[in-house]
Amino acid sequence: MSLEIKELRAGYGKIEALHGISLQVGDGDYVAVVGANGAGKSTLLKAISGTVQSFGGSISFDGKLLTKMPAHEIPTHRIAHVPEGRQIFPALSVFDNLMLGAWLVKDDTQRSDRLALVYDLFPRLKERASQMAGTLSGGEQQMVAVGRALMLGPRLIMLDEPSQGLAPKLVNEMYERLKQVHELGTSVLLVEQNTTSALKYSARAYVMERGKIILSGPSEELRDKEEIRRAYLGI
Ligand code: ATP
Image 1: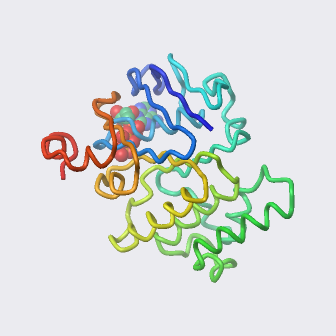
Image 2 (image 1 turned 90 degrees about the vertical axis):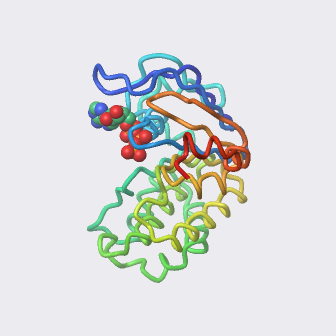
Image 3 (image 1 turned 45 degrees about the horizontal axis):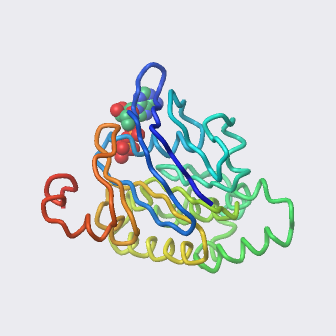
């Protein structure tokens, strides 16, 4: 798979939040986008998912223009989005939440194989399969959100602040699971305010500020450069 974003401008009504973003995610890539509050990170993922209006530029996935596609068609290309704040269905069971992620999967065997994989990654979800998702802890709800995305069998998984609201130990745990997902062959694009984890696990990163990419490169370099850390990353 390949995701290619060129000079993307996007926003809300008349407000432009992204002012010409160019970014690539290649096959097997693990890319992080970091930046402060309001930089436009969530807007970027929503533009890829087709839920935010693009004003100009292009987003293509395997050469197909996503910017011309209705939002409901994007997942058919096996692009999964784990939105900010999880957005699971609190009154449905864990199992039903996971199954909602498989709405496009017609093959029963494929569906049960994916469920087995999700339960393998997150055994806690198997234990809690019949529990109402709204009664889970924050960390468990994040597992449901990621698990639901995996039920699609994504070629690209996009995550919006997977560490948000999690205790430090759970942040590591979540990132270790995402590492496994990546190793199994899914390309990863994540946005984070938690720069430390994002730069530790990703291979490449982009730094966003006020709707623009101001810096990009191998994550290790961005992490190690003192002046970058101080000026842009707040770590
Ligand atoms: P955070 O980490 O706080 O979510 P972010 O980097 O993800 O920040 P966005 O949520 O993408 O930032 O917001 C980028 C800009 O777009 C901000 O100026 C924000 O106020 C604006 N914005 C976001 N959502 C909307 C909306 N629904 N309507 C109008 N403006 C919006």
